[in-house]
Image (cartoon, rainbow, N blue to C red; front, top):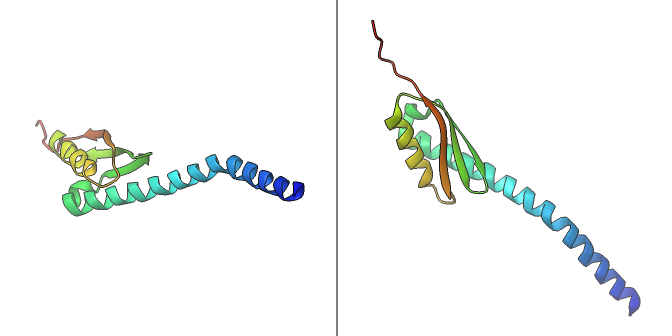
Length: 103
């Protein structure tokens, strides 16, 4: 009886110790999947306007990186990203540029 109790206790300790590592691995995998889903949604919705954008994810929080033609495109990209299932917040570190020249 004592031997089986010790085995159960040892298994429980191992499971408790491994829990945070397993959860971190699952979150990393889910973040990669979420970032990929957002990137696909941006490409499908915005077409070539999304070509200068990349996406990172951290626990359901999405951050857009890169360049867009202007603030309207950046806002549209953030809106599209926010509508992807699993996204809690959509942030942007996108920079904008203009193709207008001041000659």
